[in-house]
Amino acid sequence: WGKRSNFGIRLKTTTVLGYLLLRVLAKLARWRPGTYRYSEEQNLILNWLKDVDAALSISGELALEIVECARLIKGYGETYRRGLVNYHSIRENIILPSLGHRLSAEKARDAVSNARVAALSDPEGTRLDLVLTEISNLITQGSPG
Image (cartoon, rainbow, N blue to C red; front, side, top):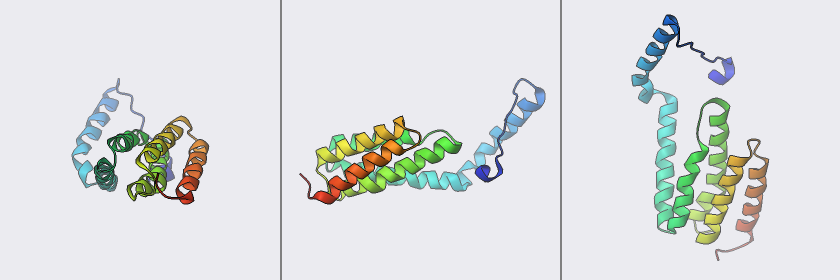
C-alpha cells in the first residue's frame, strides 16, 4: 500500500501535535501481530530457522553463513524490498540446492558467503546476479565434491 500511494509519515516530535501523533502511532504497535507483514515475517523467520537447522547437519560453517544472511533483510521501504528479493534469490539458488546436497559443504559455504557479500555491497543487484549465475553453473556442472 505504501509503495503505491507514495505516502510517508514525517513527524516533528518537537511540537505538541507531533508528539501526540507519535504516541498514537506507538499505541498501534499492539495490533502489529495481526498484520499481514508480521505474519509474512514470522513465516520467513521459521523457514530461515529450518534452513539453519538443516545446514547444521551438513556443516556448522554453512549454518553460520545462512545465519549471516539475515543481515540482508533490514530497514523499510525499498531497502527492505531489495533485501527480501536478494535473500529469496540466495535461498532459492544456493541454500536450498546446498541443503539438497547438490554442492559440497565447503563449496556451499563459499557460495552463500560470496552471494551475501555481493548482495550487501551492490544495491543494484548486478554483482549478485553474476555470482548467482556462476554458482548456478557450478551446481549444474556436477556432483558434490
